[in-house]
Length: 161
Image 1 (cartoon, rainbow, N blue to C red):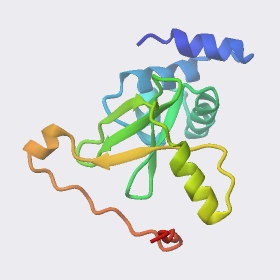
Image 2: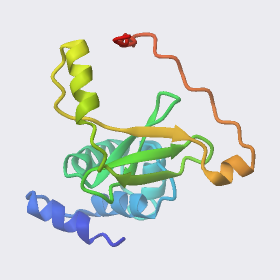
Image 3: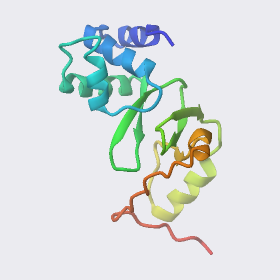
């Protein structure tokens, strides 16, 4: 993937492709798995030595707003970023090697969303689907992933049964 989508989207939104933004875009384009902001900083400084962590966070926020990157929510409570390849994609994330595969969001979630709205009283205006597990290589290597954390503030939606 070239940097042209980044340059075009930035220009269309009224932004320039600065050296810092180019460095972050290159790092994300070349990444084999999701990266957290600190990893992006370390790798980005190879392309732009003056790159700072605040600039990385601001650039990630801008790229996310423009649909150029997607945030990956990791099971350890931290998050990372991957380049976005699809207009509306979802992710499957390997807990062993951190590989991320984006897949097309063509499934019809409307019935599920409607049922959840009915049960909770929420009005859903967006969604994100992210699946976690082990890729074939990690399964073969018998890598044991870190346990998923419990969510102390989450509530289980009771079934209608």
